[in-house]
Length: 553
Image 1: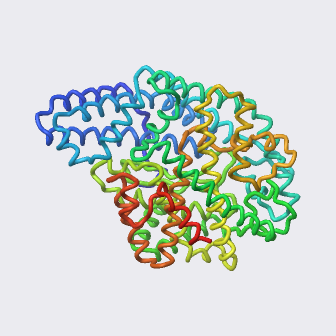
Image 2 (image 1 turned 90 degrees about the vertical axis):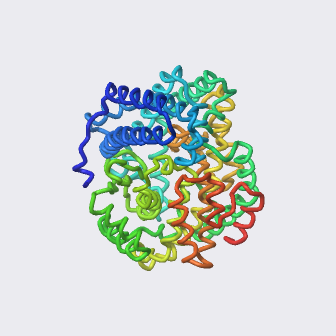
Image 3 (image 1 turned 180 degrees about the vertical axis):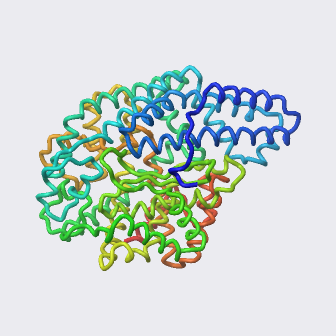
């Protein structure tokens, strides 16, 4: 079904509550594993019905954040999502304590039961009001960023549409664009500080209510870290500091020489060529058509997937002033439809949507007929391998998007991917410090960011900018506000995707077969086991990053 024709109906919480209670009572009374699993399938149907309406409402709200109807729906879901989580937790406890657990484990897998264990550790009815407040604060930040109005050169732009000016080949245009964005953030930095301060204190209170020392442990449970812990992440960041940062610094020095500046400034951030970064040729419609040709040639499965997305209006990628910032892939269960949301702005980021977000969507599409819902419930570091690896698998088609600037794009993509890993680790370490020291003041938080910049991005010079030089860059990063501890997943996935790049350079068909295998494994096993099964090394393993950097160098 086309997205515009998908019917929407607000979730009726009375009906939902009654259905949860009916399923829970039936599950408790089951007389065999077979009977309990049959009831579990009714739970799948309930979850799919609820999730379908929530996804449709959230997408339509993001498409136009000024739409009053869907803004009310979003606010409604901010209120009821913690209640639904409460019912889920109660139901999962019945499964967890089932006398037929051995049979259920054979059906839905050991990973599912580990995830249930983490869910039970991260939720209690008494923190529902705090979770509702947390959702409202997160939505307040999102709206503030989405509705930014930035006057520039006689027009008014949002943050997404400013990016093309911030990476302009003309350094003066860049300087003015960065100043305009900086002035916007300066005008709202106190409000963002207030929102974040409340979020840190709220999440800390949730953790203390549940008996944890601070939010870090609770945050890990919420992110379903089911096969690695804080110490392993710390060791990963240590290797990044040791090997990735010096490598990235060497690439930044090459970039400095290439763009012809005496010293890199923050206004040169993400600028790779003196005549401008390679931009896609053609209209957004032509970019989508090039994507259709590329996926038509990559494999029979990718052809079928992309045709399905196009036929059913499952892309909303045009940048508009009232649209939420950023991009994502989500999934609408009852229509077995991935959906891609983005803001095309005339930069190479538009093509990254056709590669990165389509990597997510392709994985969702190939497992759309999976009966066991838990097998679709992938953790984020696995999900990001699907997307980041697709960026590399599509390298040979980049001429369709960039013409004779294809080689420039590939050079930029490789350098940008490398520079990202230290940045992602910096975001992660920043969040660990924030939740280990929730008493920090806004000024102290900004100082922590500046100190981390010296370690992870020593090339960044914010000159005397009134916002950035005071440590405000992190306020642009939505994950810090809405999805704490998510960002390290991108870094772990980057290292896995780069290993796929090395593998495909040696044997493309073998690498693609392993990639498809990973997509189809979905969430049937733990992250560390699955990557090993498809021929990759664990990013946590000592020596993994050193070896990778040697090959990339």
